[in-house]
Every structure is written in structure tokens, then in C-alpha cells.
Image 1 (cartoon, helix red, strand yellow):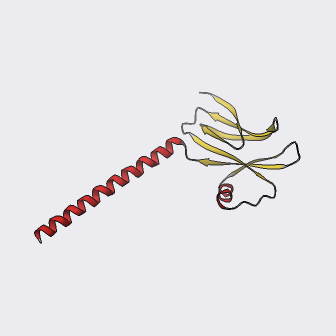
Image 2 (cartoon, one colour):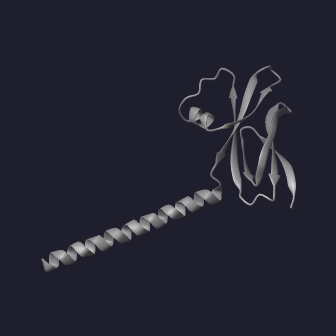
Length: 128
């Protein structure tokens, strides 16, 4: 099985057998992140990469994302601005599909239960 290092843009998304995030740097004027992928890891992980400037006030969804993120590094761009890079694990496409299927199963079970209950009520009314 192989181990490889891939580069991702920030903001960006990575999905695969992630071993670890190695680091972040400016390359050709753009922030990038290097990630080690390892085929010995059986589960697929999905990671989104975000940047935040020094002094930014984050609220709402942006604040929530940062609270649940891991720090990857700090960069200085060609104009002297400082950027802080974060990564956050997100559900993979397969995990999202699995959740949808489970919700469909729960909905079908609920419908069956309601239908059975309605039939019992009708039967009791008819006997009653």
C-alpha cells in the first residue's frame, strides 16, 4: 500500500484516506495545504480548509466553523497580510448518502406504524 502527499488550495476540500495534515504555505501567491494520504487507512475522511485574517470578527456559521476546526498554520502573503489556516472534518459523500438512507428507513417505519395504528382504530370503531 502506498503513502503519498497531495497539495490542496485554501479554501478547499480533501477527501481520502487522510493520515495527517502536514503543513501550509504560500505558493505562487496562494495559500495551500499539504496532506499525507495513506492507503493503509481504511476509512475515508473529508476535510475542508478555511482561512481567516488577523483581526477578523467572525459570527454565525463562520464562527461555528472556526470553533470546530483544527489549526493548520499561519501565513504571510506578498502584501504583508497574515492568514490563519484551519481544517475541519466534514461528512464524506458516502456518509451523507448513508444518513439519507437511514432517514428514509425511519420514515418508512413511521408510516407503517401510523398505518397499523389507523387500522387498529378503525377495527375498534367497527367493533365498538
